[in-house]
Image (cartoon, rainbow, N blue to C red; front, side, top):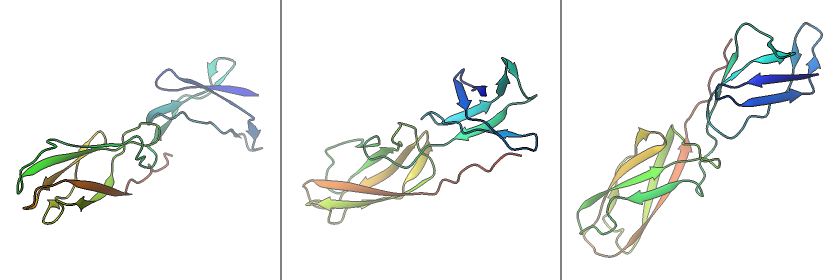
Length: 158
């Protein structure tokens, strides 16, 4: 038995291997793609909708990927004692933006003495900003980021 599903973005998924649960319900595994967002699932039988309303699924971003994420500074040459903005674009391995992260940063290098970085502010769409204030020395430094996901999965809908 095969059923077809219509997704909100005109993506058609096919599920096979349906199991009759013996109580009037059937179940099947659906493998979702790699794009985060909203998805509506509608079973089809012989080309017709099998239910009055589609089930809604929210596909959320996966864990932070350092290979996909990018960190940048507004100015790469800053006078001693002045500030610049640091921006992180947080993405998962599939390139989906990640929200809800709790970030920290460490500074290393010859100019890290006395340098500070503010708390990170989430701007939406996976972007986070902080203010880097340099110390009194002139030299270079490297910023290292760490994150903790505080994102909660969506609650199942009844």
